Length: 569
Image (tube, rainbow, N blue to C red; front, side):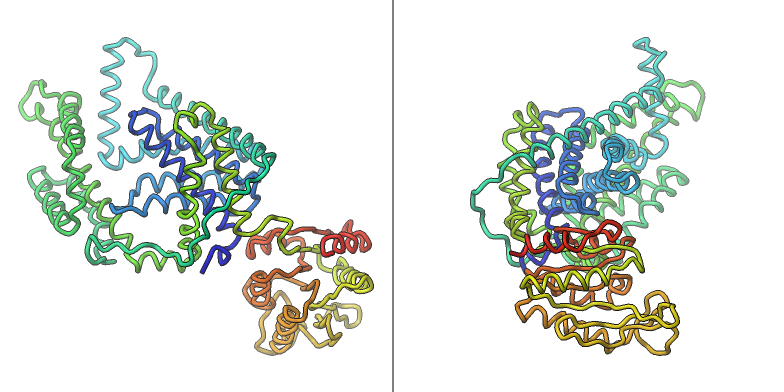
């Protein structure tokens, strides 16, 4: 299994994800070491620049979310537990940009809106995480603290909501600037000539690594940890502290025994200072340690202790979940549900990572000249792709003829084939010829372009157990004959193989789908007939990049013939 077994969009996602991961490693470590206060926002903005640049260079549907998934998965491959917070943030950023591009298309508005939404992710994620960990009392505490500071520093005209909206606006603006930077990066990359340096070959086998340090995995334990959190939240809220605290402590102790690495999180002084700060501030601001009246003076402190108890529960439960999701059973479930190419994509991404990190350069240069640095590393990804797939002009040509039903696609194809053969090309494949009864389309006949043999392919209103598409029932024996004809075309030195047509049957995995899967693993020139309404779905399903395309409304047989001859000779 090698890089060539990956679909084109997953190869691009692997390389773009490697670029993003290299930025997280190089710049992220640098900023965290400096305790830079807006590290998450800055990393998000640069990540969006990378996504926008890659999306504009490679116009593949689904590239953005796949890239986010690859980058997030790369952060999970470490000796410790999966870092769920940053992984979720990366995936959310990619999904928000993908969503905007799906709604508004690859327009300037789509990129600007998607970038703006994505870069707000670190801010909104921090707020949501804070509320989830400490509960809604965290909002009360922050509001009370802000009011106290506002009175003390005399800036009461600026409310907390206004301040949050101001920060949100700055993040939205940063996201738009990040998208515009991505435009600049893509333009520079496409103008820059490629490098001729040699790289090591890509890995042969790829799979998720095996993690044995934490003992055996259990799906039941994964579910238990997921259920403990809501149950614990209710207990902390409804039960007195003397009853809920021992229950949480018992759960934490059991988790420490099962997952020794989780206990290490509580050996850091920072977390205890945070817990102490929350408890003291809650005691002062949510009830008041100095309040008069029996039964009220310790109310705020108890609230603070409940908040820290809840936060401790969240840390333990999420750490345990981060370990249990590495269960091979869980991973295989995800791989069977649309992510079967992810392990191979990760192998390509990790193989490319050292080159991407080297191309990114020093941290200070990246911060001073972000467009130049990102252009260099994205250019490196483009070069890697050329090594995986070969330069664009070295790939097998793919010609596509589109039009609506009844627009004359098959007649156009027949005239085109005749002209190509008269010019000396070997053209094989299959064609679907319409059959009419009393002026009404009754079905189609299959024509073997190599032998000229014709047989019924599908008909309306017939009984049988063949596959159906719309009003037509297909004869299984005709599909088998057509598949054999296409396979034979791979072995008889055909210059051009025609498939008329790829439609709903193939999108459902039947018809000529299997033969097309085989052909895309060979370097053969293809001419495919596809209905206009289905073209985007067909290109997405097989990750196709047409060399030339003709629409029946303006197609010209001599011009199409000349274009094909130019590319095949």
